[in-house]
Structure formats: C-alpha cells, structure tokens
Length: 216
Image (cartoon, rainbow, N blue to C red; front, top):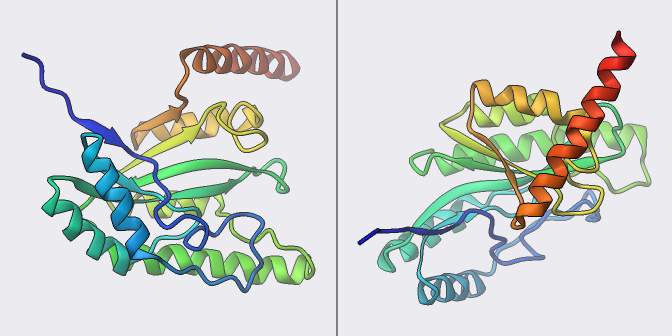
C-alpha cells in the first residue's frame, strides 16, 4: 500500500493582524492570535495534514512559531517556518511578485525574524524619503530575499498565475533571474490548476522569444 503525506506549505495563521500586506501603513505592527492559529491547526489535523508552512505576509513571528510548533507536535504535524514575500520587480519597482520562502525547521526562528524585519525596516526608511505619503513599504529586493534564503536550507515557491498583478504571469521579465536561483535552491511555481501552469509556460516562451529577437 502506498503511503502519502498531506502537506500545505502556504498558510496565513492569524490572518489580517499577522499579515503585513502591501496596503498596510508604515507604522503597522503585526500581532498574533494564537487561539485562532491553534484552531487552524486543529482543522488541519482533522483534514489529515502532516506538514504545514507558517507563511504570513511579509512577517514572521518567532514566538508564535515556537508555541505553534509544540502544539503541532502534539498533533503529529511538522510546522515549517516561512514567509510570503512581496518581491520587488526590479524593472518596475511599483510592482511586486508573491514568493513563498520556506526555511529549514531546525533554523533559529528568532534570527529569521530579526533579519526579515530589519530588511523591511530599512526599505520603509528608504521609501519614506522617496514617497512620504504612500504606504508600499512591505517588500524585499531580490538581494534581500537571497540573503534570507541562504541562512539555511530553503525552498522558493513563486506564484505562477495565482494572483492578478502579483504573479509571474504578470511579471514575466523576472523569469530568467528567478529560474537562475534554481542552481542554488529548489524553486517551484505555485498553482493549483494544471492549465495555469501550461498557460504560464507558453506565456514565458512567447516573452523570451520576443526578448531574444530584440537582443539579436
């Protein structure tokens, strides 16, 4: 008999208050409702999941991870630390692409939290000088995401066609650089429909063929 492990690598625990989404103001401070998070874990157990990713938007709560990880262990579930990043489009800095970054469960969660939050704080200060009245400060550059990824064994999972304006489908010019990261890290695209993946591949082929003709 075949044995399978049911996993969910992208989860927003305590959604809303723990998510630093693009529309949040620069002074927004995330918080965490552990009661709601434990309820999600209970539901995951009932549905047969054995591995979960803690991937809130643009933030990682280390203390919550430690407590949730212990709770998960009582349920026979492995909790993996992670974050859903707004990765800045380096050709069009007004746009971002959603990337889920998963870390080694043996990583020091407090180091991950400190490093991640320091990047967002740095970017917020830069954006404050450039655009004092705007809110878009919760993003990382490719260099910052790479620094996070090499802190431990990591997996990069990119939104393929999942969300409007925040997917690889809408930012095809980033494909070659993100694909190059696969030389050093496991890189995948996140789509739950086969036709989405097929459509994305064809779009990238068309885009790259146009670019190659312009280069020639």
